[in-house]
Image 1: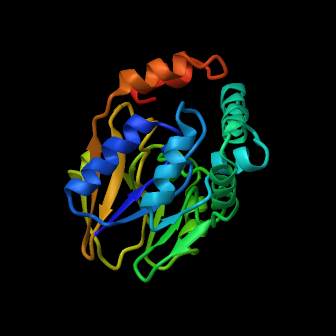
Image 2 (image 1 turned 30 degrees about the vertical axis):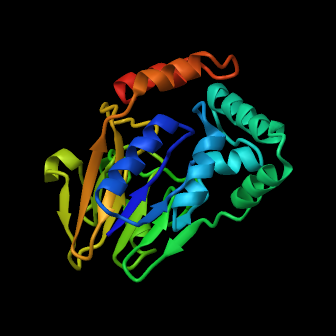
Length: 249
């Protein structure tokens, strides 16, 4: 079994709840699809846990933005990136500071195994391209190009909305498939949802468990109010980055 997580966004309460569930299930392999940091109040703690616990971690657009520069971000997201960068720079331990920057700087944009391709955003543009459920109606040609770029199974994050895209193109939310999907020869793009900032109107953390024959969408509650209070206590972070967590938006 492999646990596939994404979009932690510096939310320590969510990440620790997800890791506890992964441990409870006896899963030893974790792949992170990126956006470890950005938005939330605990970037250093979340990054340190990801370094310790994951088999592979990818570059997300917020990881890229903190390392280099924010591109096409709203003001709240941009300011969160600058604040996160300052947190890393202000760590008085030079070895720890260097280890974090080196880890971020060496993040790949793809992970490929015999079973799947993993990217943060899409197989076409692995850091920045959004794949939304509405795209199956508004831009079906987009999926022809996307599905040409992997062999069988592709895992993504980035939109924070979990579900499965099939070649039709079709989209199925976890609720529509009872949170389980039987693997076959049919190609699928699987959005694993977000650990730290869900946006499907469900505030619980989301991740996926993959076996040889199935995948399961898992939702885990966490202490949302503690995360919100932390955000509100940091002047550099827009309070909306906390309050939105209550509604999963």
